[in-house]
Length: 67
Image (tube, rainbow, N blue to C red; front, side):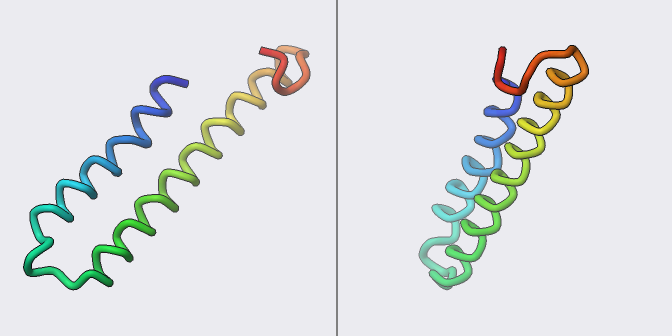
């Protein structure tokens, strides 16, 4: 789970660094679009991590969330 959280933070940190670097010359709409894409990507990644965890729990004969 910790690996999953770390993998979600990396795109966010990169996005903030990119936004700061180009804040003066970049279009605010473009920065907003990049932020939305980063959040959507992180959301999809987290749902995949949780889905994998449920599958492993079900295979082990435990109900989802019993961990």
